[in-house]
Image 1 (cartoon, rainbow, N blue to C red):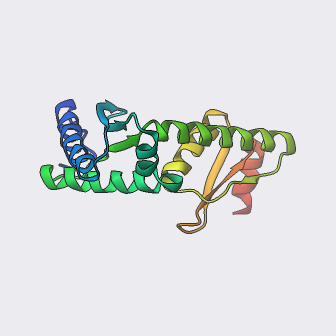
Image 2: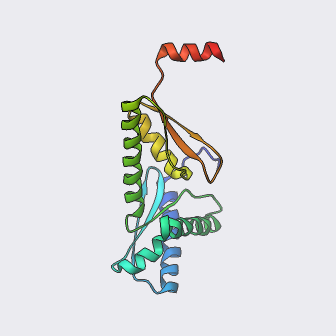
Amino acid sequence: MAQDEEKTIDQLNEEADIAADYLEGLLDIVDYEGDIEMGVRNNRPTVQIVADDDTDIKHLIGRNGEVVDALQQLTRLAVQQKTGERSHLIVDVDGYLKRKRQRLHDIALDAVDEVRETGEPVDLKPMNSFERKIVHDVVREEGMKSRSHGEEPRRYVTVYLKASAAEDAEDEDEA
């Protein structure tokens, strides 16, 4: 399938089913109790692991989400092996990604407020591409500008005031 072709809802649901089966197998191996919830959000299959035991869940999230990130990569590979196509599946554990998105949203709004108050650009700490995209989206929604700088894994976002039309024209003259 071409990269730009959108998958049908049936294909996305099939990916979620494959992922759920794979994750259920992993939960059985580590002897963790958990429910698997599946869906499609923003044209991406999603699978969430929800468990009654907070201790088990913490192990599935890991420090700074390292384990849930690894689970997502492994699950995407399992889906790709079955379908022959790359998947943009999202795996979440006990709402970790939702909480992470909210924290990043708050960080971005704090940076926007600081830039508005001082007029000076604000550099944020290094983030992965998922985190940077959330920040860029929030900054854009707030009518400001942001740009990523640096090399992985130390890539970070800088938040700026949007330049006025006169400043933009001046910048183009200097280029």
